[in-house]
Amino acid sequence: MSLCNLPAHELGKKLRAKEVSSVELTKEFLNRIAEVEPKIGAFVTLCEQAALETAALVDAKIARGETIAPLAGIPGAIKDILCIKGVKTTCSSRILDNFIAPYDATVIAKLKQNDAVFIGKANMDEFAMGSTTETSYFKKTRNPWAPDCTPGGSSGGSAAGVAAGEAAWSLGSDTGGSIRQPAAFTGTVGLKPTYGRVSRYGCVAFASSLDQVGPIARDVTDCALVLNAISGHCEHDSTSYNLAAPDFTKALHPDIKGVKIGVPKEYFGEGLDKAVEEKVRGAIRHLSELGAEIVDVSLPHTEYAVATYYIIAPAEASANLARFDGVKYGYRAPGCRNLIEMTVKTRTQGFGNEVKRRIMLGTYVLSSGYYDAYYNKAMKVRTLIIEDFKKVFGKVDVLACPTAPTTALPLGAMLDPLSIYMLDVYTIPVNMAGLPGISIPCGFSGGKPVGLQLIGRALDEMSVLRAAYTYEQSAGFHKMAAPIGGASA
Image (cartoon, rainbow, N blue to C red; front, side, top):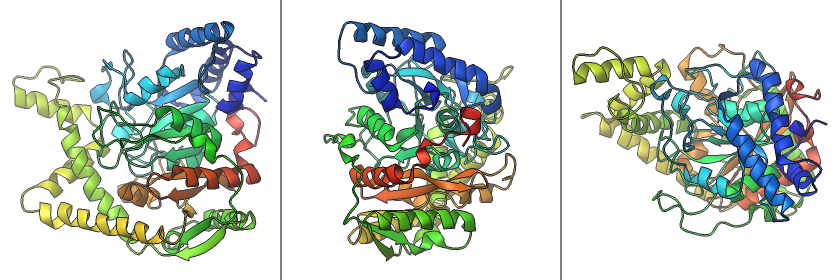
C-alpha cells in the first residue's frame, strides 16, 4: 500500500523506525498531490517549500536521537479558514484572496510545537457557508469516491484531501456539521470537539457561538492524536475551557461492554435515504453485538433545529462579516469616488451569493422590530434543544444516528438553498448544544460512503472516541481507500 494511504500514526512509527524520512514522506505526498489534484481540487494554496523545511528539521531531530511528537514530520492539510503566519488565508472568498495572515491561529501554533508539516491550505465553502464546497470562489472540490459528486462541506477540501491521500490528516471547522458531513461523504473520520475544547483564535469567524475547529483523518486514532495536539485553554479565546485536556488516546481500546447507546427516533424519520438508514441501523446492531446496550430515546425539539440554526448563524455572520469593508484589509473595489461607494462595491464584488444571502438574512432578523420575533425566539428554542440533550444523557452515554440523510450528491444537484440546508439536519443540533460528535464510515451505498454519527456529553470526547474506535476496529471500513487515491475499494 502507498504511504499516502496509511494513517498518520502508522507513518509516525515508520519515521521513528527510520524506515522513511520526513522529507521523503513529504515528497511522496507532494507527488500524490501533483498526480490527483487536477481531478480532486482539494487545495487553494500549497506550501511545498515550508513543508520540506519543516520535514528536514524533523529528520535532523530524529538523526540526533531526540524524541519527536506523534504528528511530527507528517503532512497535514489546513482548512483555509485558519491563519498560518505568512501564508494566504482566503476563506475561499474573493474578498480575502490577497490576505496574508500576520499571525498563527492557536491550533497552528500548537501544531508547530509538535513539528507537524503543513502541506497546504484546503478548499472550502466561502466563509464556511455551504454544505457542498461549491460556494468557493476559486474552485469546486470533487469527491475521491465519486468524482462527479460533491465531497460535502464546508470542509470539503480537508476531507477530500485525506480521502485522496493528499494529506495524512487535516483540520476543518464545524459550525453546523462542516467536519462531520464531509467526513461522511468521503469515508473519512471527522471529529467536532465540545465547544470551547479547542481555541477559535485565528479561525475566521462565521458564527461565533457555534464554530469549532477539529480534525479529519483516516481513522479514530489519528483524530485522537490531532485532538491531543490542538486542545487546551487559550488566553486569546474567552470561550475556551480553562481546564486540562485528557490524553484522548487512552480512550482507544476496543471495549464497549455496558455502554448505553441511545438511538433518537427523530433522526430516522422522513427525508432519510433508505440505504443510508439500513447501513446506520446495521452499525447500531453491530455495536449491540459488541456489548453495548441500545436504548430508544427522543429529542422532541429536533424538528426545529435547522430553522433555529438559520436564524442564529446568519445573525452572527452578519455581525462578524461587517469587518470586510475594503478599508482594513482584503479586496477593495477599484475606481470608487467615496467611502460609501467603495464599501458597497467592495462587498458586492467580494462576496458570493450564499454569503450575501446569509448576511441579508442575519441583518433582517437582528433589525429593530424583528429581533424579538425571530432572534430572541430562536435563542429560546436553542435552550429547549440543549435541554433535550441533557435529559437524554441522564439515561445514556452516547447517541448513535446518521451523519447525513444521503450519500454524496452530484455536483450542481442542490441548486435550492433550502435543500442544501437540510443536508445538515442531523449535525446542526450538536452545534446548537455545543456537544462533541464524530462521523465514522459504516458502509457504502452505490459505491459511496455512509457515515455513522456518535454524539456525547459536553467534554466527554473520551466516550465518543471509545465507541467509535470499538466499532471501527471491528467493522474495518476505515481501511478502504478511495479509487482515485490509490488502491481500489
